[in-house]
Length: 271
Image (cartoon, rainbow, N blue to C red):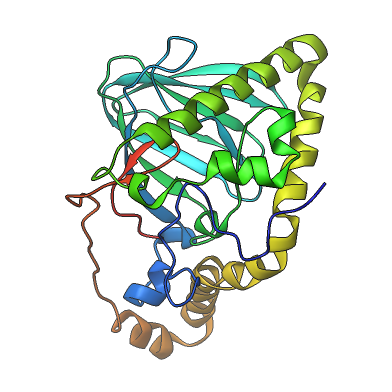
């Protein structure tokens, strides 16, 4: 199988890279990482109906990152395929749901108003391309077909342009999701083996470049906590000096123009 280029970017976030393709994380941009070295975005889940009659997003998985939903409006569910099999988790305002890498997830918008914040581990890494859409095997194992299906044209990447390309991508991924769901029904979680093999092959060449991202915000946040705990224990004056360097940061997640993401339209991504 041909792998994607090492410099390929996440098809769900084609325009989130700066400085020649490098992802700018919150720690780099604002001087302080988000808690735990995470990233955050605002999502309005697609309300258009897919090929199975359900409205919602494009089923996909992450190969490294844990993801969490904090639901703020509307009613829906997330359908998942994982090592635990198939599941449906209700989503209403006030729900938090999270899942580990390898979980194929599909947001379903039951009332047309589903809206949530998404938290991702390893700030910057999801945007660097750890996402794989859950297409059927014939698409996943062919680089040219995968790119043609996953990449959005320049005029289809934001809400200022037509939604047709994002809708077609979603519909193809929903078809793939039902293929993999049937595989799980027939063979249990082992039915996802071919999907996982294809996902690993698609991102393998990128992995070396991700190590620097893991050494960025996630490691920096943990290291700062370790240093402060040590200072509190051994050097109170240094601990107090560190507290004196405190401050607040803020940023809007609600721009006028939104991006066409996998699950829905994306507000500003603080990644």
